[in-house]
Image (cartoon, rainbow over all chains, first blue to last red; front, top):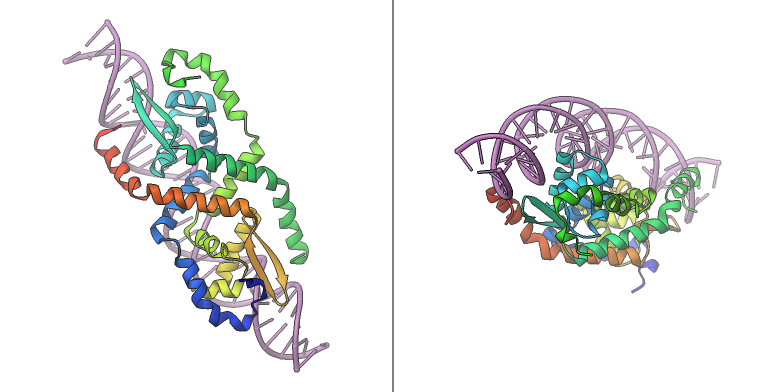
Length: 135
Length: 135
DNA sequence: TAGACGATTCATGAATCGTGCAACTGTTGA
DNA sequence: TCAACAGTTGCACGATTCATGAATCGTCTA
């Protein structure tokens, strides 16, 4: 199916198809996925995640490593944990955090890789668009 | 390297290691990755992305399919485009949008899959935590 | 070139988010 | 049990973000 050939007159006909495509993902899953992305969509939290790629860390270690206040780190970890990006376990008087699973690690690596490819394009694209529309 | 065996007295020694881990990802890439996640971290925009998985769509079609105002859709598409999640091209008087590349499609599928696994855990975990700390 | 249509931009107000600090909870070891 | 330490939570403030509708822009066609 080559949607590129569809003309504006087909809009109504296509409508049902579109609605189906939109509904193909359960609303709950969509919401959860958005929450997942949102949790990762903050530089501070993302930095935390990249550190956690190397293994388990207690909150104090993380605070020292990132040079931030302990409550701040704890807050961020809570967000990440609520959305299932990290998990924690207690070891003595320390609470150790780590990435929730390989899925998260893969997602993380993939996004960073993608970002590195697109970093230079971002602003250039924005300016080009301002100057003269599409292409 | 088993970081799980590290005790609190090792914090200083470990510090250098942590700092290296944090710096392993260039600040720019981290920022871009966060922006990427942030762009996907909204239910409305995410829904838009899931629709775009099926191919190219013009703004009007998307607006009708999702039953939203055209400017609203356009705004969301702009965010997604700025962060490199979607690309566009003009075809006649229509502007066709699609996912930027396979990378994005894969990331999207992966996140939704992960979300579906963790949907039930999220709130239960939150409550469990309130009730009695770790585990 | 004028009109129509598709798409984008802009300004506004409501809502949400992130942070910093203080108070609090919970665990360990004496 | 008590003191010290590790971590969490609550609250308030400033900054972002999002939806909305009007105005504008760009392209095609008559």
